[in-house]
Image 1 (cartoon, rainbow, N blue to C red):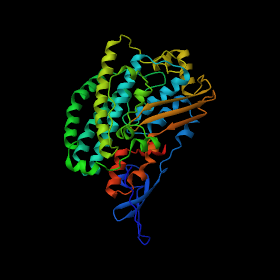
Image 2: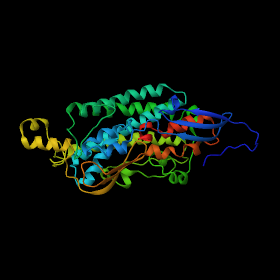
Image 3: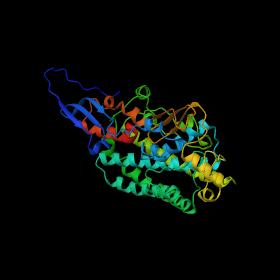
Image 4: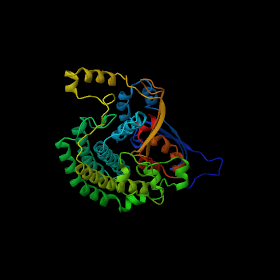
Length: 401
């Protein structure tokens, strides 16, 4: 638990400081009203909701097929993970089993997304401590990941990638070539980034014992993802509740000891190495299976090829019914979660058998983790609050939803 700084003098005068909502250090549109004694933070009160887009209410008025693009705008730093999480939730309700190849392709995309997400968080944390070079260096690698996404689905940031029932298309030879090139070149870049920060005395002095929290504190606030693992709790959805055949992969769960900003940085750093390891295993598994099917055989759910729609009446009917939301959806409720860039990304879906969800609740890790921010910065300097927020990787789109 961070040391709480107070002043017993009742005559002491404090300063109110508005950190945000439009401030470069907030990395998004949200506000923190800080009560300051000089440079020391006495208390903080967060204000959120500036970019609330009513994700859950929108989902109640859209057919299942049309919800995927909304999930892009949640954690837009790793939107494919949101896409896949929603698809798997719908598949769970519909009772669809996705072929192995499609599962492995999803794993590759989700782990690339995790790398992109962590690159953004760690490199910007470097910027917040005064080091711009690493940020520029890492963003070149992020562009390479986006080029792979662009080759797979035509989009880069808000991807709308994949479909309920599998992938909308297989990886092209160009996508495989770009992926192989990335896997060959990225480790050297990540090693150089590690040399720049991991044992840098200035960076360590700015981040060690800053924004620290205990395992008990993290669990009580409902932390998941790197923020929880940095506190020493080895919880990972990919291991606890495997999906997309993650139980077949070998990888380690990195954990920290102090739960501070430095540990959060190091956990994300090691997770990128583990993601590379997972992607390489997924590629090997795809090469080992003869089946080239990349979607389930569910024509009443999965869009038919466009050339068939033009020439086949049955395909045209299915296309119309799927796009317009005339699916036969059973009544029931399901919950499915995936390991997102910031923690457990969950979808609680309630269906009454209608063309749209009766209720869809999104468990957004940024919203949950951010509740603890005022407690984590009490008694610390203003500059400490900046790097603490940066290490929590609060994404405004996911925070407000």
